[in-house]
Image (cartoon, rainbow, N blue to C red):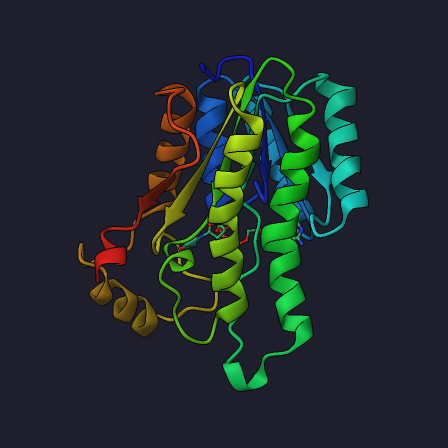
Length: 242
Ligand SMILES: NC(=O)c1ccc[n+]([C@@H]2O[C@H](COP(=O)([O-])OP(=O)(O)OC[C@H]3O[C@@H](n4cnc5c(N)ncnc54)[C@H](OP(=O)(O)O)[C@@H]3O)[C@@H](O)[C@H]2O)c1
């Protein structure tokens, strides 16, 4: 599928990795819908930056853990574009909760945003993909090899990889569904330089990747082939092998 004149929804697309994906798809001529929850200022700036590139852009506020918000997001897309071609499920939370402090709230917080959200977006978004489409789920290598202190997050990403396979079957042959599992590509804002260096030492390639690595992969999975579905593509510097 070529991105030119397609309609792409990137959840959490106002900043960081989501912005890199939205930007890369706009550079290929796609019209972009960004969903945001709190980042209203960044979302407004993102829309202006995308419009300057000559594509149409729209930012919609939605808490993706709430079906009513996801339906509202899809209603905005229907009103403005009448269709959706590509859904990129990128929004997620990433919270450290040591096992001894885990709670139902911590579990629901991760699973609702990181797994139920992508499910709801795929459920309602696929109904707008009348001529076929693509769904890219941004997972994490930790969905396959969990690390400590992030149990709900790791399980949510394992679930997202499972969701990718199940959706690929349900939505074949017209819609292809693929997961991208990044390794460390962009440190959380609160991460210090010692932490960054420690993470890099654990990666076989001995460095952090970049959001552009994920964006390039996403563009390839839309434009480069229509014969991948249900798979997970690891963009992790070999982290899974470590
Ligand atoms: N950064 C990395 O190195 C790395 C590594 C592996 C995997 N990943 C995955 O790659 C994706 C992007 O990573 P990132 O570091 O750029 O993410 P991020 O900055 O931590 O979060 C992305 C966005 O998710 C949105 N979000 C969170 N909960 C939401 C909810 N309930 N409803 C709607 N939006 C919600 C936030 O929007 P608002 O700010 O508007 O609230 C946030 O801007 C994530 O899925 C992450 O798990 C990242």
